[in-house]
Image 1 (cartoon, rainbow, N blue to C red):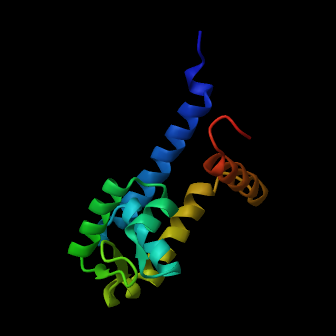
Image 2 (image 1 turned 60 degrees about the vertical axis):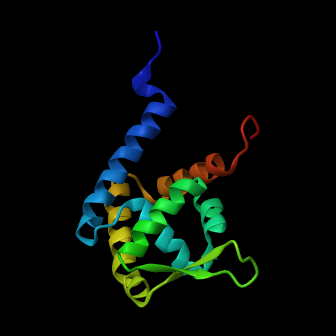
Length: 143
């Protein structure tokens, strides 16, 4: 019999659900989702990325990312500006409001991370982060 409760897929799924739920609850007052926060965070690092580059960095398909950007635009947090080198593309740029939320939202994200990881030691957190990065970047079938 398959031990579902100890399977890696099941455990990762449940851990994700728990972390997502905690973060979602904290972001509700801003009318944001964790995915939208992720896009903002990439733009705080490098504003003016194209939708394609945002899709690559977040590993979210281009159609889904388009909807996320639409909602951020409706909230007045980002805008689409013509790309200087590609007339078919747009740069996704933070508005003043989007820029102004960085400090506040990053503090919330740090608090959620601290709460979420509280049951494990700093050393375990380092190991977990290393393993997750390795799994995120590995190609199917290769270590």
